[in-house]
Image 1 (cartoon, rainbow, N blue to C red):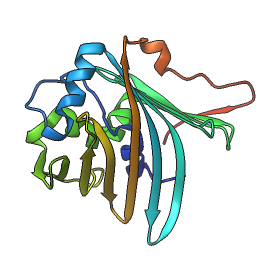
Image 2 (image 1 turned 120 degrees about the vertical axis):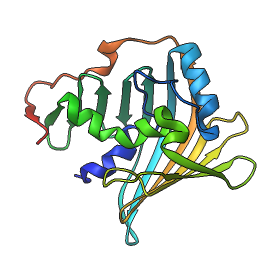
Image 3 (image 1 turned 180 degrees about the vertical axis):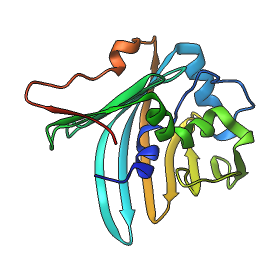
Image 4 (image 1 turned 30 degrees about the vertical axis):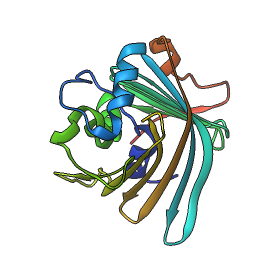
Length: 204
């Protein structure tokens, strides 16, 4: 299992919270925020690679789904799934035949870095333009769960297309494609149930 701090980047690349549009948005995600607010739901295909000291720790592909104000879900091709809500979340791991249950405070801790990314906006990150569609974000008040830095590249549609994150000794590469926006599906689409034969544990 990849350490919990790294899961921050996996789950909440574009986390949303009840005060979703409360502050001035970062330029790098302003178009995404406007589209999520207008439609209620966003989906994107995600390719993820995690590298540490030259070794690939994880490489997979999946779909990220977002619904403001507080719902997100990742479905990987492997069958692994993760959901986050204000009241908690679940992490289904088919390879281990188990479902991990996250309490609300754990779910909020997991998404803390990316909550700040959108919700905190300029109050949480220092944003520097590095080209016409490239930005670098540095946390103003970093902690052990936050990314050390984030590189964001936008597509011609001004939506995030590539991200690089540094979390401790791990580098995360995320490629996003085929953004789509639609009406929200509601809380039931962001709740996982353990299949027959699975063990269920609370995330310690």
